Length: 75
Picture: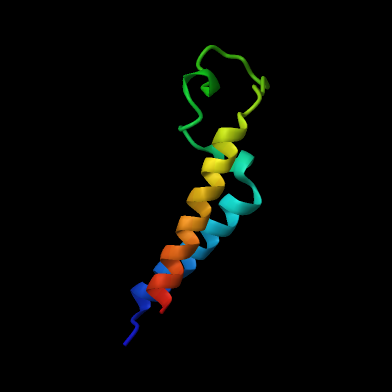
């Protein structure tokens, strides 16, 4: 029997997975995993360094994994 916690985990996994697939660049900019060059510690307001394609595809891969885990929990 599926309880409320499992449905909440499925919902969170689906939302996070869809967000990572739909907007990987926004997810990278919101995270701290963008590398040391992406952190704005020196007051460089508004500077947007380009994000490498490797990070974009890795973020999409994490999104697919989140959807897979949510599907596994749901089934």
